[in-house]
Image 1 (cartoon, rainbow, N blue to C red):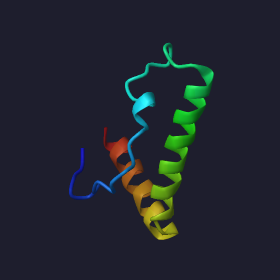
Image 2: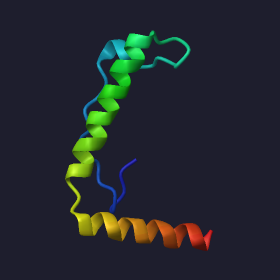
Image 3: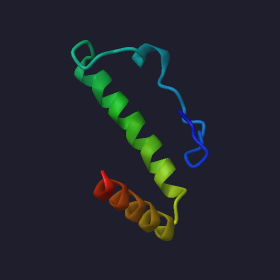
Length: 68
C-alpha cells in the first residue's frame, strides 16, 4: 500500500510461475529464485536513499518504537 511518505516505486512483479506459492509448496530452486528477486528489489530501493535519509528513517523508527 502506497502512502504519501512511502510512494509506490513500481516494484517488478514475480514471474507468473512463482506467484502464489507458499514456502511448503515451492521447490528449493523456486525459493532461491524468489529470494533473489526480493533481494534485488530491496537493493534497488535502498540505492535510492542517501545516507542522510537512512539516518533520518532510523531516528523516526526509533522514536515510533519508543512511543509504542
